[in-house]
Each structure stands twice: as structure tokens, then as C-alpha cells.
Image (cartoon, rainbow, N blue to C red; front, side, top):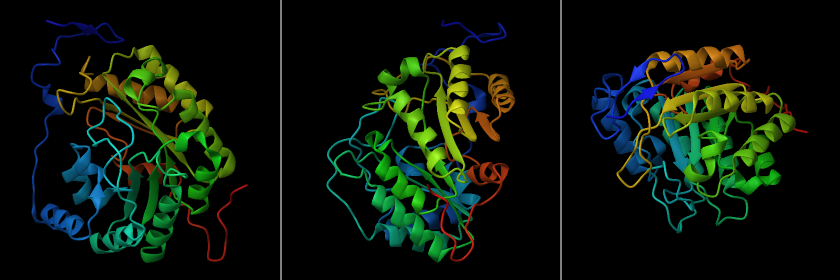
Length: 314
């Protein structure tokens, strides 16, 4: 039996290969609304990270009229060892996709939409122009819907980041995913310090747009390393933080090294708030987009410019 000790010397004895603890169990209810939204996605040839990444919160979020669209196809140029999204050489670049996302947002009656993507290292701008166009089309079609983007690192280039920010998202999200020591093993081609620089740069370019990041726990990090990651993110000016339990999507992905107790997540939330994050969403089933609309409200609400007013970028 594997034994782990949390920061308060409580013993947790659960083998990652055994059944998940009770607090990770969810009831999957595929009601009529869920079925209708899934049919809409298929009809418009759209992808959601909710489905592709096997998110455990898909039913709750869709029922709450929040969804995360995954643009730029469903094949990623990177092969991160935690992620269930397919990797390989992408073959599609659909320039009509932004319009279809906007149509789906209207038909679904969404109040908050998260737009993410696979990594597209094969594109000169990493897909930033499609991100920007999707933001604009959604805001035109559904002005009452706030727009959050969860972007890749664009290989550290500033121009693609500026392109996305100029489109006026309500939240700019980029996940560090894990602590610095484990980053090279967990994230293919990504760099921890490069991610911090992207978040810092976003705050410098558009200080009025809240920034957000998230990480998974259970990959072998220590509690002190999680706290150090919080300090690094606050040092980069990040406003919103999510912390959730890593769950192994297939036997071919990284194994779970520890299941954290709910009380440990509560302590992480308290530590994050002490450090000055405007909102910390921490829990076993928390993912980057979980309660995303509530997180935005905690950051001061939507940040839509008045008619004729430009987004404040330097």
C-alpha cells in the first residue's frame, strides 16, 4: 500500500491504481439539454474541450450555460503526457469556424464562453488570428456573453499575444499546468518560465484584462512547490487561479501519484487568497473552465469597452 502525508501530517492511503476516492465520484446525467447541445456541436462541426479532454464537469457546465469551445481542429502538435487530446500533424485550418462558434453561442444561450485550442506550432502565428476573429464574432453576435480565452504559449512570441488581446477578451487564461520541477516531464515543448512571461506580458500590454492560470496536483509535486507556483503567478500579475486533481485519462498517460483530500484543496484556496489572487477555484474536480463565469465576476465583472472605445493596449 502506498502512503502519502499531506502538509498537516494526515495519512492518506490510496493506491492510484485502485478505485478513485468517493469525493471524485460524479453522477453523469445526460438530460435533454445535454443531448441537444451535443447534437448542435456535431451539426456545426465544432469541438469542445469538455468532450475531447474528457472533463468530468461537462454536464454541470453545459447545464449552467457555460461551454469551452476548442478551435483550430482537434489534433494537437504537442503530446503532453497528461492530456487526452489527440496529437499529431493537423490537417485542417477552418477559417469559417469563428462564425460557427458565434452561431452556437447564440443558439445555446451561453452567458460565458471559454475559447481554447490545440497547440498549432505548424502555423506562423500559432492560430492567434483565428482566436481573435472568434472573439470578435462572438461579441458581435452575443454582446451579453463574456468571452474567456485559454491560449497556448505561441512559442513565446509577443505579436500573436497582442493580436488576441486587441480583440478584447474578458479574461486571458494560460495554464502553467504543474510546478516548475515537473514541467519538462508533464508538458511537451512548453516551458514554465515562458508561460510566466506570457502572463506577465499580457498584464503589461492590456492591464485591464484579468489574467488567469491553473495547475493540476497529484503528479508528484510537494505542497511547498504548489505554494511557490502561486508566488510565481502572483509575481506575474495573475488575478485568477484554478487548482484541481490530476486524473489519468488513459493507461498511456502519466499515473496519479497522489489523490489530494478536499481539506487540502481548501487550504490551497486559503493560501492563494492570502497571496492576493482575486479568486481561487480549488477542488478535486476543478478544471480551468470550472465556474469560469463566477471567477470573472470575482475579478470585477465583464470588461466590455463602450461603443467606439478601443481596448486599452499599449
